[in-house]
Image 1: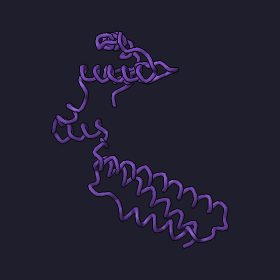
Image 2: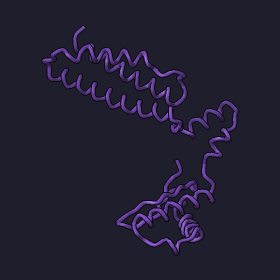
Image 3: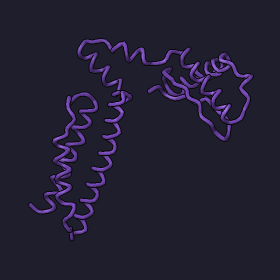
Image 4: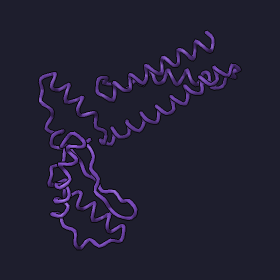
Length: 185
């Protein structure tokens, strides 16, 4: 086989590897596709030292190697998060699969979402910490003020974002802490 056929095969193997890793991360595959990954890396190593005179083929090969390296970093990051227990698969997809099987969504997923009081307490702490880091006083700030500010903005945000499933975070802009809202992940 020539280089063009080898690179076409490598490109197809890489696409298959990406698909298999996506299936593994979404829970459809039970095992990480290590044999296919090793085969792709072996194919890349086989052509790494060979001189490629055709500019188009050289570009295709370097593009494939760069794509593989990018995906490898992405996969390693997700695997590390899985090992640390910080990676959560897409809740919507898993809930959908569970509903299709006739099982209610797990209580763990429902309990993992913070309640309104917990979220207001978290936002209050983050807001006070942000004000302290900006050398602003925190004496006049209370949980009730934070709750009132959030409740005042909720109807507008619900209409704007189309859902009442909102999460709030504290950001510092121009030296002043602000409470920002977004969709709950």
